[in-house]
Every structure is written in structure tokens, then in C-alpha cells.
Image 1 (cartoon, rainbow, N blue to C red):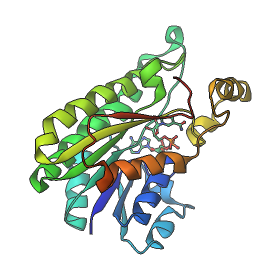
Image 2 (image 1 turned 30 degrees about the vertical axis):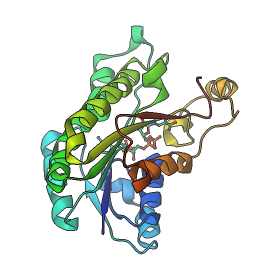
Image 3 (image 1 turned 135 degrees about the vertical axis):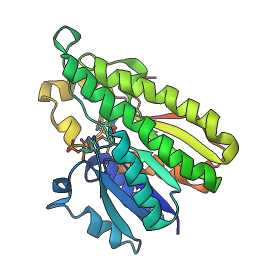
Image 4 (image 1 turned 60 degrees about the horizontal axis):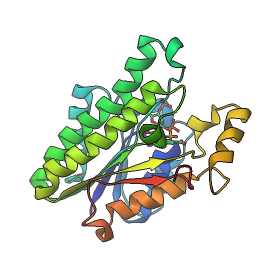
Length: 244
Ligand code: NAP
């Protein structure tokens, strides 16, 4: 049985990806930063109902040592790690003039260093297996910029460069690395926006609606599938035509 590890997967896009990969037949290693994220939460039950194994691994993905231990634990529990989805991410928005150093550093650590940490340790497992799929969550903010998100857009632009670098370094070992760049997707992250901000965004989207988490999960499922075996180093925008 193949195994998929999805970071930040207690809720939102990560939970939808985990459920979709369970439907595709993967055993699932869930991750989130605290045990509390799994309380009053039926994601593990939903995944197990698909007839696959599911375990949660609590760890702060920005912490190098914790990630090393977690990857070891996932490998011990499941034997292989075939798909890594670097999904965990946060926002700490503010206009540049008012953004604090703490707001900047926290977002860089969680959104960007986490991708280094996870790709390094899971990449080593995949290189030894001579196969694997790494899929990173970028964002349209990293491709086009977004006012109030200098920290966030920096990390998402970095993820594009990291994706292409990992694709070049690990390609000869049978490991692909791609990114998806969502636009505005209905999750707790975007619920925080004001009604005025939401309306302004919808006006710029060709399809005149927000995306659903399942619409991200479907593309991730494709990138993890045999059909995407010759796709690497690519960034696929999933934004309903936000920018063209
Ligand atoms: P979300 O609902 O906030 O879920 C993110 C999950 O990651 C949360 O459960 C969060 O836990 C967890 N997490 C945060 N810091 C972590 C850490 N240090 N270690 C482990 N887990 C951590 O976000 P989402 O909207 O599903 O977004 C998922 C990914 O898609 C992110 O990378 C985001 O940047 C990207 N994205 C989202 C959108 C969108 O419209 N929603 C658009 C473009 C890109 P806590 O709640 O405890 O922090």
C-alpha cells in the first residue's frame, strides 16, 4: 500500500487533500501543529471509512528537529512515503509600513522553512525508494503579489523556486515535484477576510465564485497519479481565472 503525508491536514485544503488521496487508495499520515486541531473533528473517521489506514503525527513543520523525528515515525509506521503534500501555511497580514518583524519571520518559518525541512527528510526517503511525488501549496499571491501580504507572497514565490530546484535535483531518482497555486478558496483562512474584501476579490475572478477545497484536492490527486508521471517542476494555477 502506498502512503501519503499531508502537512497541516486537520482542516481546510489539507483535510480535503487527505480525504481525496484516501479515496485514491493511499494510507494517510495526517499532520498538524497541535492535538487540539483533531478534537471535535471527524477527518480521521472519514479517511478510515475509505478502507485505508490513517495516523496523525503532531509536529510544528517549521521546526527542523521535529520534522526529522516525524518523518522517521511516518516511515516506521507505514514503511514507505510515496506522496508528500507541503500544505501547512499561515497568514499574518498587514501593510508593509505596519508589518512587524515577528509577523514577517513567523510566516517565513511556517510557510517556507517547512518546505525545506519536509522536502529534505522525505526527499531522502524517496531518493532511496527511487520514486516519489512532492506537491507544494503555492498561491496566486506568490505569482502576482497581494497588498498586505509581503510576508506571505514572499514564501509562496519562494515555493515556486524550491519546487523547480527539487524537481531538478531529484528527477533522476524518479521523484517529481510540482506546485499548485490556488486563488481564493473557501476555508478558515479566507473566512477571516471582510465582506468588502471578499466581494472585491470575486469581481476579479472570471468564474465569479470562490473555489472549493475539493477543487484543489482533485488537481493534487492528478499530480500524485500515474497520469502525471512525466510532469515535474510545474506550477498549476487553480483560481477560476483570477489572472490570465
Ligand atoms: P487553514 O484552513 O488555515 O489550514 C492550515 C492548517 O495548517 C491548519 O490546520 C493549521 O493549524 C496548520 N498549521 C499551521 N501552522 C502549522 C505548523 N507550524 N505545523 C503544522 N501545521 C500547521 O489553511 P488553508 O486555507 O486550508 O490553506 C492550506 C494551504 O493552501 C496553505 O499553504 C495556504 O497558504 C494555501 N492557500 C490557501 C488559499 C485559500 O484561499 N484558502 C489560497 C492559496 C493558497 P492552526 O490553525 O493551528 O494554525
